[in-house]
Length: 380
Image (tube, rainbow, N blue to C red; front, side, top):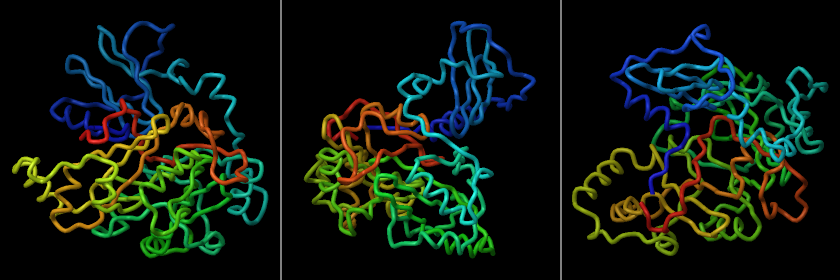
C-alpha cells in the first residue's frame, strides 16, 4: 500500500515540475470569482501546492486557493466558502471550542493558565501555529516550562541523527491531553534547544490533542502492537501522532515476531535480489532515520496494515531485532475531527473511566495521511 501525506504531496508535485517556470503569485495577480464556475479548485492548508496548465504554473502557500479551467490557472483572492467542507457543516461547527489569544491571558503564570483553560473550560489558544514552518505560540521561560516536566513522552526520535537536525523546527512542543488531564513537555528537545539558542527563553508550541488521545508512555515502556490495537478497538484510545515521522520519529519498536503475528511478511526468498539489495543498502546507510515503518489502524474494521512488509523481512535478516514504527489511526469522520479545536466526531469511547469532554486539533504541522481504501494486511 502506497500512502502519501498531504504534506509530502506538494514536494512531490514540485519535483515533477522542476523543469517548469514556477512563479509565486503576487496578491495583485489573484482574481475574484463570481459564483462557482466549473473548473478545478484547490486549497492549501500546509506546505505549498503547485497547479499547472499549458506551461503556466501557480504556486499556492498555506491558506491560499487556486482555480484552473480551460482558460488557464490562477490564484484566488478569497477562498470560496464551499472549499471549507466539511468544516463549514453544522456538525463541524457544533464541535468547535472557544478560542483566545495570548494577549487575553490574565495570570502571571501564563503557561499554567493555558493548560488549565484547556482542561477545565475547555478553551484553546489561537491561532494554531504552523509548527513545521517555524511558527510557535509564544516565548516562555525555562523555569515556567519545567513546572510540567515529567518522564512521560509521546514519541522517540531516531538516534542516528542529532535531535537538532536542520529540518526540525526550533520550537519546543508541549502536548496537552484533555482526556487524561496531562501536559507533556518534549524532553527530547528542551535542553538541546536551550543549548542551541543560548537562552532559557524558548519558543513554545502547544499541541491540543483529541480527548481520546494519549501519549505512548500511557501504556508503559514495553507496549506492544496488540495492546495498542486492543485499546483502540475496545476503548477508542489512540496514540498521539509523532512530530515528524519523516525524520525517523517513532512510537514503538515491534519485533519480527510481532509483525508476523499481524501481517503477512514475505519470506526472504520471495523478495527479488534487486529489491533485497536496494532495501539493504538503504538500511545500512540510514537505518530507519529517514522513515520508520508505518502501521495503519482502522477503527471500523479492527484491522491493521503495515506499509513495507519487505523492509521488515530484510531488516530482520540484517540482525535488526526490533524496528522503529509510527502508528496512524483512522476513525469515522476523521476529517471533521481535523476542522479545529473541538470534541472528536465519531468516537465510540474515550480514554479512561473519568475522561471529560475534550477537544481536537491537528498537532501543528504534522502530516495527515488521507484514509486509503482498507488494504489487505500484506499489501505493500
